[in-house]
Image 1 (tube, rainbow over the protein chains, first blue to last red):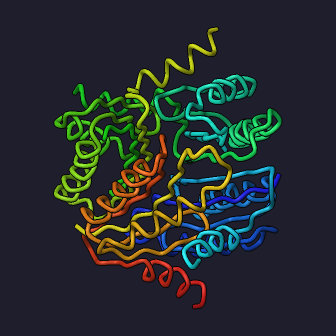
Image 2: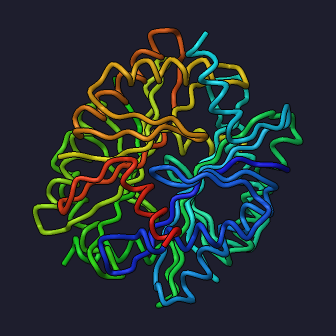
Length: 100
Length: 100
Length: 100
Length: 100
């Protein structure tokens, strides 16, 4: 089962900036067989369900290993049986209508 | 790794009401070794990370098997290494402050 | 336009526990003409759209006034034109099916 | 109070594709004094809190006017008092660390 997901990780690191941990998550996500696309409020993920959620779990586990005590993630995930739709397909479908 | 999660499933069932599918998800979630608590905009889940996400995956898979073509879920998930905090612990922590 | 919403506020307070700020938000939300129901991973809100979002804005503003530098909220909001559905109506609709 | 937000609208349109309504929302959002950036699972929004939430409300209102009976939105919103951070600033902050 393929899925499209969106991940927004908030580490409770005691600081105001979380960019360091988000960068670390990007490096973790890149180790999985999934497509990833960083945006201004999270990261789009695309791939097999098990790979996507293994990647998300790895973010939590590896941030905890660096000493982060608490982590909150907000995730959106979509699955569909009618077609295989990648990240850029979704953006293009909207832009095609806007440009018609 | 234990986690607390919140799940809100939206099946694209072609209808306005999704209560039938949400009820089906409750029955699916109950088959896993996790605590669940339905509320007005989702369901709180608590348990081992792998059990919680196996339960969420089962909701998508089994709704698809009944013919639902597209499903969107919004998930919040929290992990912490300092203590084991169950669903009612989080509510009680807030209510204790309010009642103090 | 009435709406049902779900609010989860994360204050960047430099600490691991955010229960103090969540309790403060409950007190802020109670000052608005909306129904509120705390659960394990957020708070259900019901009322006029403008009241609900004024309440959410007040949470951000008043937490900032106490010195919280950064705040993230995750919000779900639903509107429908076919009927007026309150928080308990949604839970009952699911439980009625489960008990049938 | 400036804010960064992320909006994902799901119209209950009785169909599998929602691209038509998402395109309509893009046109609605463009009428407000906010920065918007479409991505694969939503749209980043940046501007004054009141403008951002007026834009989101307009999406619900105008989709309802076209006959959509039920709409669900998932919103993330962040505010901070230490600095004014735009959409591209957040992405750049992460990429700068990755490229360092």
